[in-house]
Figure 1 (cartoon, helix red, strand yellow):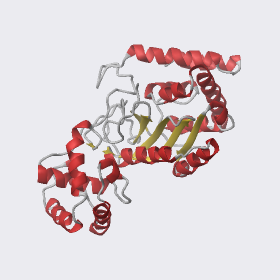
Figure 2 (spheres, helix red, strand yellow):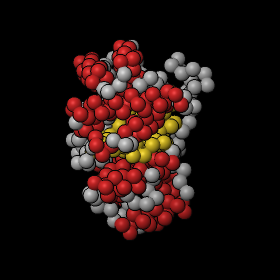
Figure 3 (cartoon, one colour):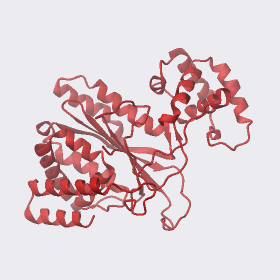
Figure 4 (spheres, one colour):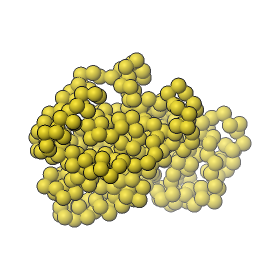
Length: 364
């Protein structure tokens, strides 16, 4: 199972109308072929694989190395299946910008039509976004969130963040193209915890230190932060004043918190008395800055800090041909190509479109 994160160069603009219309029709045909042949769960597995997702976007005719592939492919899938979603038993909710904020409402409407309580799906949608925006502080803010689920409430998430600041110039980045976007994949199948290694795999070229509160190594830090959050706000604020006097030589010193808002959030956690770290994250107003501050306080008091390991595990853009950070599993990659090739041949599309799609696949 490969789910995770992919780094992509940030491109501006949108897909031409004629191209998006073709992508909509072709994605519909391929999704329908996969679901009929292998079932909705297999589609979730495939769409959660960063390699497969990128290959899928290439087959649809979009730039393989563009960040726009995420929003465009997701938009095409949602638009293409909107009138057959109940027939297929697979549903697409959310999207880019304002559409992402409508995800819970869309999930609820579908749940009502299915006659099921969608509460667990809404929770999964909100928690996956909370984790990647707050717990994995890698410098990317989410602006796209798509939640995909089946009749039996198995689900996948494809969300993307934009870099907060420009990256340093390098041989891989052209002048004027210094920003990147990062894509996050989630899959409910075999997901054991939202707060401990929720990404089964990560695909990314840019690896850098970042606060990773969902790393296995952060287990003790998560416990400490949860206990500290139950303390009286006044006590925590005193510790914060001490932290701010320390020379800026630690990643976590970038707390730049507003004492007034910090106090309000601490008051909520104190009154709530969260039972665990996952429960703490659900506290209104509990965001990245509060988490960084509590993580540093916990490290200074108890000597146990969080992990700064970037969750990246597989090279993405060039397929890890040089073996860094890890070599690509060629057998799995070839299986993905064969799977997609088979789906295209079985898709209900014209022969010309099939030939064009297969030709694009052969270039991957």
